[in-house]
Structure formats: C-alpha cells, structure tokens
Image (cartoon, rainbow, N blue to C red; front, side, top):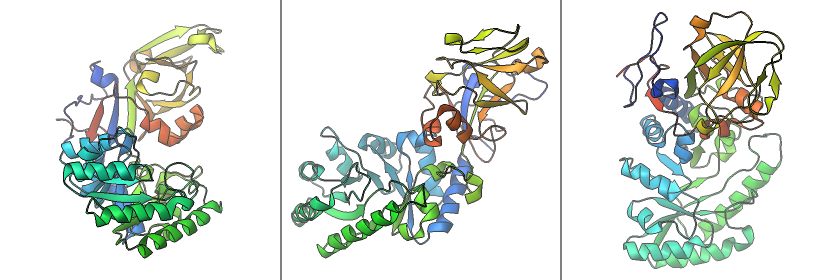
Length: 400
C-alpha cells in the first residue's frame, strides 16, 4: 500500500545496495495500520467507555498529527495533549475532535485554546486565568477539574476540592465556563498487585460525587491510563486515556504487547556505515570502556544520542541480516559500534539494514533494559533528526 509521507526512500532488493542518502541512513517507520488495530483492540476492552488517544510529546515520538488522525479513524473520539501549544498544532492540522490539554503555566495561551475549542484541565490556580481568557475570547471555556487522588503531582488536593468546586460554580453561573469533566491520574496501575490504585479510585469516586452534588452535569469522568485500561475495568468510567498502548507497547514489566493483542507501531532502522577488522585488545568508543577479546570485525551504525539513542545503552541488541549483535563501547552523539565477530563478509554487511527495534528485530523493552529506563522513554526520545516514514500495514515496503 502507499506510504503517507513526503520523505520516502525506496526499498532496495537483496541484490541491490541501498543508496546512502540522509533519509536512508536512519528512519523510524511508523505503521499507522497498527495504531488503528490498537485502538480497535482497546475499544473491545473498554466499551461503552470512550477512548482519548494521548498524542502528547509528538505522539510519543511517532508523530502526533498522523497518529491522532489514525486513532480517530479507528474509533477514538478524543485526543489528549500535555500542553496547549501541542493541541493548537493539532487544530492547525485540521483535527477537530474533542481535545484536552492538562499541563499549564501562567504563560499558557488559554485564550487561543478557548477560541480553538480545546478543553482545559484545571487543578486550582488556573481557574481564574481561564475565566479571564474566556471573557476576552467572548466564549465560555470547557473545563475538566483535576483531583489529586494520590499521585502528588498536578490536581487539587481533597482538602481544597470543595473550594475549587465553589469557585468553578460561580464562574459557570457567570457564563465564563462549563465544567464538563472530572479526572485524575493513577500512580501504580502498572503494578496491579499494589493497593494504592484501590485507594485512588475510592478518592476519585468521592470527588466525582461532590462535583455532581455541586450541580455539575459531567460529560466525562476519566482516570484510566493504559495499565488501568488493561487491568482495571472498574477504572474505565466514561472515558479512558490510551497512551502507551496506542503505540502497541506494554506498560507491564513482564508482559508483552502481544499478550494484550497490541501491535508495536514503530520500527527503528539504520544502515551499516563501515566495517573493519581490528586486533584483539582494540579499545572501542570514548573512554575505551570496551576492548575486543579476539581479532574481530567492528560495524559502525550512524545513530547516536543526538538521534535519541540512550548513551548508556551498552550491550543493547540490534539485528543485522537476521542475526543479533550487541552495542559495544559508549554510544556517541552520531554513531555506535557493534562487534560483528571474526568471520564476516564485509561486502555483504556494508550497507545492510540494522534494526534497532521493531518488526524483525529486538523489542523496545530490550533497549530500555540496556539503558536502565522504560519503553516510554525509548520511543519518545527519538529525535526529529530521524525521519519518520509513515506506512500502512507493512514495514517500509511501500513506495510513493
């Protein structure tokens, strides 16, 4: 099928060395068909609850506009962003679905958000700013009130909740806003055995009841992130916020995406840029923290921490021609080295595709483990220097 990108390198055949162009040296292939399948799978789990597709951080590194559009096509009805500036870009791209932004400072362009029909989350101090912005925009703001049920980040404390409801009610009576939602965020839903999730849901139910008793006609109550979507049906309420699962990744340490019917959407690839034979004892990389143990061949991969590859991911796996090799030495800004072993065909390896993770290669979690982090960070940090190639139901075999 046709790809949906203006930057499409042609796929070489087995007998044809690829042209070494910037677009082909490294790319993140984003399978939008898998995004759609993930939405459909989650829809089966949470119906009749609605799905908010969370596309903050440029769609977890996958491309917010493309992923948001695909998610809506598959049945998601809301989009979610951290910042209003992210949400405004979605509006500029023509995505007109209900859209929530939840992380603000005094410099947040609330008036622009209201004019663009972006719902605004309020934890406390923002309420007065949103009211003034609504007055300036001559349009009531749509507001979701956030209650901190135990995560300790944003959200009103339970002690301040009554006062927030009172102020919000006054502004609603003045016609400056409509309170359309109440929401919170879970702290340990990725550890289902822990009791804190039960405690948070109890606190959330109490906050919702108080909001309804205050006269607010709520359209949506939402607290479930991906781990709660997959493990806590009692947390689904009117809407769930699908983040990591939208991109086909598992939030649980010992469970694969496939066990939930999810399909990873990103495949990160590069090319072998150089192959050379070195003697035993050869130091590799800054600091010379790795030395070869025998005469061997080293392969150079033109990706580094400027591309979002974690600098400390020593021993991370890559796949070349179906065989797993390991990163050796420190990852540099633009490149890293793999030890190819003593017996290789240099001509065959030079220019071969390197799969860092995704279909035909290692899992994202293997890179996360090597870097001492989580899969969320690995995909989100892939930098804009890496071209995104959008494909449909195939891993880069489509042309223009």
